[in-house]
Length: 122
Image (cartoon, rainbow, N blue to C red; front, side, top):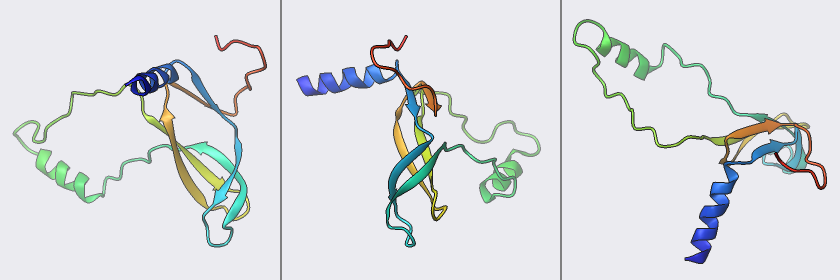
């Protein structure tokens, strides 16, 4: 029980702090050319633009056309206030991309100023 409460407290604390990730990271590359630890360039994953020609979008647009109002349910009960951050890692030697999900946070930064010794967060 105590470990559960301490875990909840740590998770609650993680929302208040800003996550600062360096621009480069030495990590394992899974590509068949590398298969070793190499330097990776770090960027944040972003969702791509929705395609108008995707089958689901075409079906939805066809159903929505004409009279009859909204045909599909619209979700309103949003529970989460943050999203999980996904890092996009590009190997510097073979240019292979891999993704790495980290914890939830309100503020995220890549390559920001490092926290010095003895300095406060606020």
